[in-house]
Image (cartoon, rainbow, N blue to C red):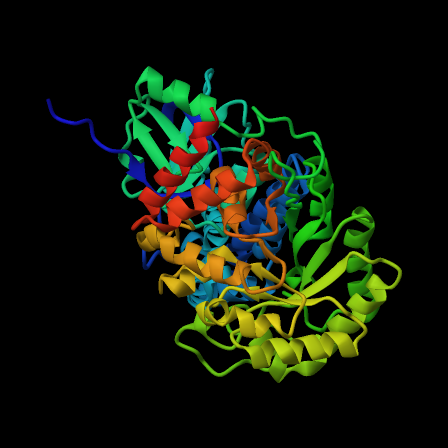
Length: 555
């Protein structure tokens, strides 16, 4: 008897499982024909194009008002700003002025921005889908065709799309859309971030996903990154048993995180803006393990002032008066250029270029200003810790620690996201107070696989044994070591990380209840056994299976 086909594989970006019939995104917006000309009234044509963009901006702002959380609102408002971008409007006018019809002018103006965004860096490349969505909405308005959207259904379903715009994701109803699957996308896209915020299981970068027929029953495992076609009833029951999505695990705070036998493992939240703090507290975070500060600096003509920065940092510290708040200093540079700094020399591979601490060492005034603001915010608030991104060697960690201490910040740390830093973690540990492993970038650099590349998604898997080896080196280097990458949000992998010696876990707030429950079901020795089994494996898939087998023995 032939064996049943294996599951489709992609990148799991939102944990949990969902089973239901496939429903594909409705409609597409046609590309306006190249060479399309208007009838000669350039002023009227330009006015029509800009009016369409304004309608898009207004509709996105309206959608933002109905978004279920701050993350959704922020993404949709950022998209509205894209639609009102003055440079984009100038590009549209210029094209219309030479006779190009409004829909084509909009399409071409967006194409220029899209190309620049895609080539800039991994972070900005993940925003291409946001830009495409704005373009499609404007072109659809000008052509008088419907905007693609989530299909209506009287029963819960699995949404399948080539890609999913943030505007669609932010408004998904988890009671109707039990999971979604896309052909494109990556773990750091807005779509992935919103899926985690909503608690909707999701798998992205699944080749040929849109070939799945409407109505076909599929089982989506957002933790494993798989899509099982026509699952058996036992598969579905097993998934439901394993399920740790927020719909099955209370989101209410349930005490400190830790193993069954009492090893404390603080469960912290990754946040991007102060507006994320409410969700972090609602899901029981004990503090903040990664406070990304880029939001204060990107898209600014000038450096934010000390008072503005200090107020934003103090807000996080006040939200967790009894816990740690780990602030990452500005992570920008070649991959995220800043308008107020001279442009870096062109770099063929921005992710490998002058970014993070590398950029801050060339512009020490930016780092000094941020550390001064942190020191002001931390005065009288003992939970503050500060860490640097993109650190490679002990000289860099020592220089950063010295700058922190000069500013009055006595708990400096560094991120471990470069293999060289993990391999020589003991040297770095002599200079700082703590580490935080960023599994996303560490996987990217360890496996030489662009984290935005869907074709290489299998190499982004945090279960890669080589990545586990690097985490073990960092965790055993002599200072407390946390993990703030998305790997920490996988309940099974979280147990393995603890078994490797990781002291704290930081993740999207919605993932915290499931991680807490899974971890509380195992002893530290069991976690160590699962970690050993995973590291003894040869592939990510067998590492995951081996750890699952060890942890399943409790049941």
